[in-house]
Image 1 (cartoon, each protein chain N blue to C red):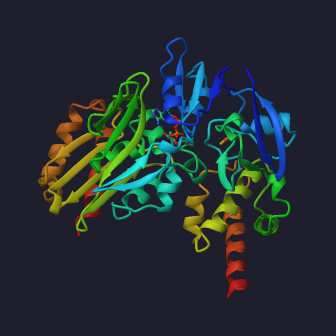
Image 2 (image 1 turned 90 degrees about the vertical axis):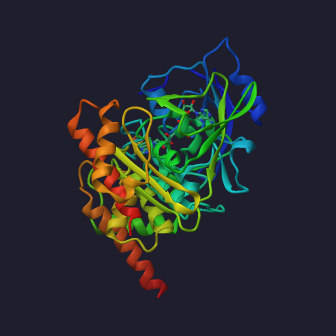
Image 3 (image 1 turned 45 degrees about the vertical axis):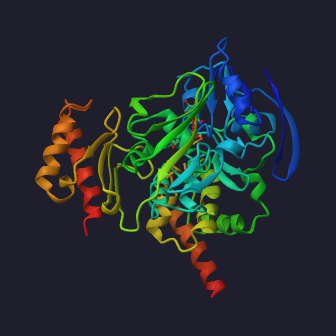
Length: 271
Length: 159
Ligand SMILES: Cc1cc2nc3c(=O)[nH]c(=O)nc-3n(C[C@H](O)[C@H](O)[C@H](O)COP(=O)(O)OP(=O)(O)OC[C@H]3O[C@@H](n4cnc5c(N)ncnc54)[C@H](O)[C@@H]3O)c2cc1C
Ligand code: FES
Ligand code: FES
């Protein structure tokens, strides 16, 4: 349970971090809260030569409002999002999701960007931010680009990040005052990773009726069909259909659990 | 491969050479001889190694010492004079909140956080907040009751 040797740098700014991350003579990885990378290093599942600490980069630690978006720096911790010291645009949804991640000592260090880059399909932000219609801003040697969440997570531990790129920011569109958010995470033990996730956003003034089934051993399944909110038979049919072609297709118990997670999330938005 | 770090440990300024792969708990136990911080799982799950970094609870097994340069680390040894920790130590004794004591340093740090951050917690909330700390011998009833006792006493004293 001890990590293999690695070197460590903590540059002062994002440009310095990107310069180190573009080195191709070493295996280099960013590290933020080390709450996912730490276990992997200790178990020697990963053995990088150099870690570049991005957790204190000023460019990655802010939260700001930009028009109709909340822009969250990649190195903002789950605990800060839980505590809510920012101009929330989600009616408390971000805080609610954050509070359900792991345990407070993990949330004090673990970050939103680290969670998305790690891309565990069972991770809370992976499902929740997809349902919120968020996008991620990636910074790399060739500049910045913005990728929608639905398209950023490509598979298990697999994202659209290219070598040398980091997540700089997460952009969350503002909910309208009429928006309703539903989130249900099936766990046996409080704070553990999800066995099945339902995440839904119903925001009629913005024309949003998005349902997401997460923790499917692959990218979250996005269902853009308003009828699943009102018609339980349709909800189950659509969900069963999507799950039948997902990575858990051969596992009827898991399919059932995911259908229940979705149904419970939808129940939260239906008055 | 070593780095020089300067940090505050239980109020004392320390400069030390660390290998980046050394996690904070090993650094404290083996280089600083502060063995109050216990190690169970070494991958973030059991909570035995929980201590304070800049006043906030954190896992010292998946936080590397090198990343704590400039930070203030408080271990269970550093909580001797802390009033909340003192109330909790008394309550853990009174309520049989420990048996072998292996989980206790992490329990005290996590419990202190509950008392300070969730003063109105009911028993269910205490259990949710403490769910990241595993005890393999006392059982949780005594631990929950100990935290309950401190929260109740604080309310009585405040009212
Ligand atoms: C006991 C335990 C329980 C947990 N339970 C849950 C849970 O229920 N739900 C949940 O969602 N999560 C859970 N987690 C994971 C936790 O949320 C982590 O904080 C998170 O997954 C990773 O964030 P981090 O900042 O610690 O990233 P790190 O561990 O530092 O890094 C993770 C990965 O992301 C990369 N990375 C980090 N930052 C960036 C960046 N800005 N750009 C590009 N790549 C980057 C790293 O190279 C690494 O590959 C749990 C963790 C533990 C230890
Ligand atoms: S030893 Fe750190 S959480 Fe178990
Ligand atoms: S008192 Fe023995 S593990 Fe908790």
